[in-house]
Amino acid sequence: MAIREAVEHWGQTQAQAARRLGVTQPRLNDLLRGRLDRFSLGASFALAAR
Image (tube, rainbow, N blue to C red):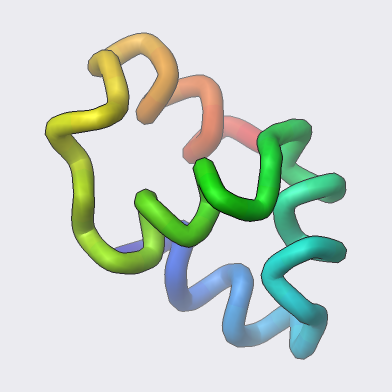
């Protein structure tokens, strides 16, 4: 939820936000849609840290 709020606050497209987070846009879309089973715990923490 915190990552979703940050992305919305940035006011960028998903593609721009994905580049900012160092992931692909489809990967960010998975995260924003709550498909957390596709992310390891380590990957989740890494994204949150960015």
